[in-house]
Length: 359
Image 1 (cartoon, rainbow, N blue to C red):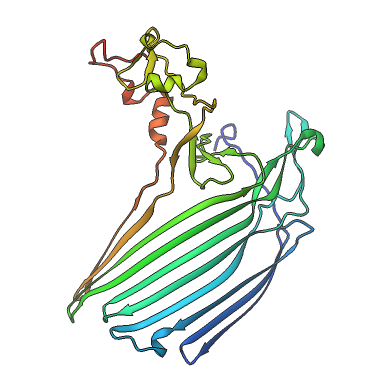
Image 2: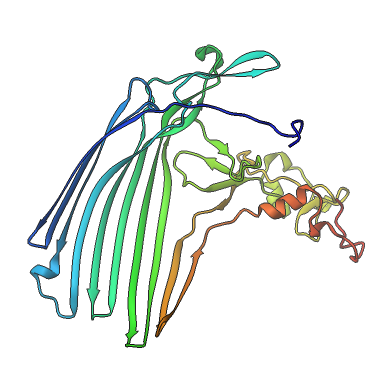
């Protein structure tokens, strides 16, 4: 309600999309299934030189149990497919952009008439198995690669005529996912039944190609550039600094080759400090001079879940347990408390003089 405290903005964007789609499914003798799809997309979000893009899907399945009798097996189906999908750029990615500050106009982004959608291609292989009138098993392997992912590429001001960057189809990212699901009917009675489903999946994503130098990206929307994009490394890698914890670690830096061990000590928090300046931590630098290192990886080794369904007469109960194994979590809460000097680790009250660590 107070106009001096509120920033009011508005914008108007006009976007046009035209799509054509054709699909066909064939079911032969209820045991051989073929499916195909073709799609042609046109969008004003694409660069003016690449307004159209074709996509497709083709898949097939064989119900093996309809041709071959397998004792104890009610259904066995093998399936495979390949499909493509597109990711559209943002509204302003193809255009020249400028910024205005204090009445002065400056160049920002140079346009890109060749900008095209990023294309994701996925190959999927699956198996469905129903057996013993009690179990349903599904196993899926999916391999994906996204070519031409969007990146803002820094430009030479001299070569670009003063523009700082351009959005390009610059990155290729691959992923491999394995999924497993097992549904079990434990018992079924007129007044009571219980079933559960176990699930698990494992995914790995990698930056195969990066059309620019490695760079940091924000991960929390608070200016924390915790993630690092680098060709040949997985997505979700966190880079940061490390602190020296031993004299041997200190000497890995060639600049500290003349350091004297007696001048240093390990403080109660486990960090090596100069005895004469116990409040100053020492940043770790390795033998090559590097001072930024992998400090975490958010990718779990696998995810799992267990869904339970219990019924008694007209009442039912559903419970889901899920979790992940592996994967690092950035403790932004703790970092923020240190930033605001409010962390409990800073409270030295009640500690002896030898255990107190200077600010």
